[in-house]
Length: 272
Ligand code: GLP
Image 1 (cartoon, rainbow, N blue to C red):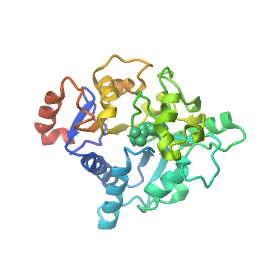
Image 2 (spheres, helix red, strand yellow):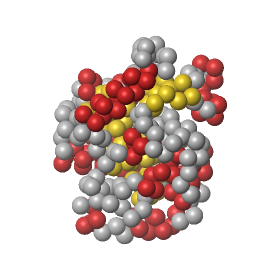
Image 3 (cartoon, helix red, strand yellow):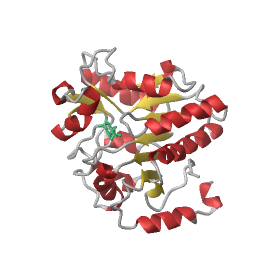
Image 4 (cartoon, rainbow, N blue to C red):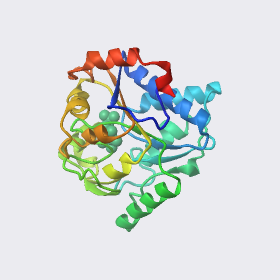
């Protein structure tokens, strides 16, 4: 069971699961507990393939009546610049398809940075203000790029950055080309992204990663030195960060056995 209270961890909590589906279940369980305690909580939502198991699981919980997001609001992490409103890979479209369509959240309360704005800098400032006005994010779902990026904060990003325009690295564009028919040139060069400082203000961060291609990033994130070169390492400074990974993504963790022992021996009282 995951803790969604304001309890401070003594380190990034690592939970190693047997499958990608199980990472989704554990994160969805945390979200269900959050909404049982706070029905109007603010959810931070991520795109990419990693959170898909979470969204599928949330849909099942809403169908089963154990979870309702009817009073929830949500904020997306990032958005491509320049994709048409109806583009299938525009992150707003992806979130509508993968999350909003499966649960009972009001689409009007799902917010994202406006990558089609004529004033992109103004759109970034407005987005920061909207998150603040909503009271901040209660639980942020996060993935991680193979190069350690979170949202679209590429290596070298200021660890104190706020929502802004970024240029995507060739690595990220290659990684994401699979969503654009394998055509790297079809992947936009620019994006708007919550900054690392923005993301760090979420009260609980739940990062999910699966597959061997994420193992190096997960190792740095949990056990490496904090550095802008591996932006996800900043989570070591977060008071309540949980990393949920499958065996493959955990394969380079030096202390994997210890994390598993700690999680299995986690006393019930620690969950409250
Ligand atoms: C993109 C997104 C990130 C995501 C990353 C990993 O770059 N902007 O938010 O974490 O991809 O994606 P995936 O989960 O598909 O590996």
